[in-house]
Length: 244
Image (tube, rainbow, N blue to C red; front, side):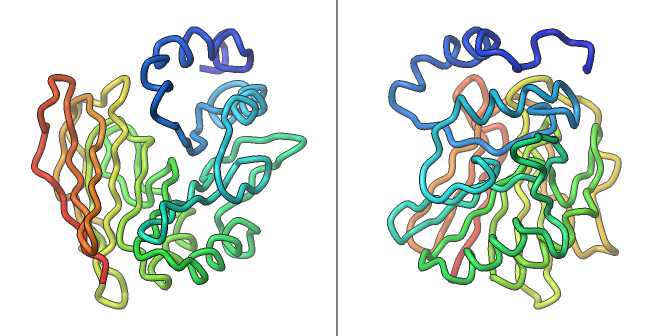
């Protein structure tokens, strides 16, 4: 992938791959992303990152030039767009997610002080992943520990190119859902190599290799997540979470 010449390090790449194809959607729907490995030199061009940061206008409180940020929907939900990548930038270095990192300290305090009922982190690499293209990310152990302590109920991830909701039972006996919804482009058609992690502490609830977007609805203490396929029909049964 490093040999590609159209990775996103020029505005012209964004015009043809993002602004034109999504023009109708962008007229009415704001897009608030999280950085992935293809948005910089973790997998592609180092120049991608600066152009990425220049092409998105992010809401709420932003850090590291927009590499991570937070925004609220009233007092019902607050979203935390985090950066799990190793993408390098002279101006905005990778903030890290490990113990002692600035990003980890920030999200810990942000979750602690948030008045929202639903506190929803989203970031690219999943802590747990059955594959087939990728595996679990042990480097996210400290971050997930913070999410457990702050009683987060649902996390959204990409990276793996399929639908793969994973249920973790935390050390405190709570349910934490890691929702992998990464099938917007190229699919991973092989089956997951594993469906259980950490001695059964986490398990894959479902798996579908089909293109989709995820419809999320929140009503009070109940969240319903339904993956919708290209024919506008669900590709799998809805997943439900509750937040006391």
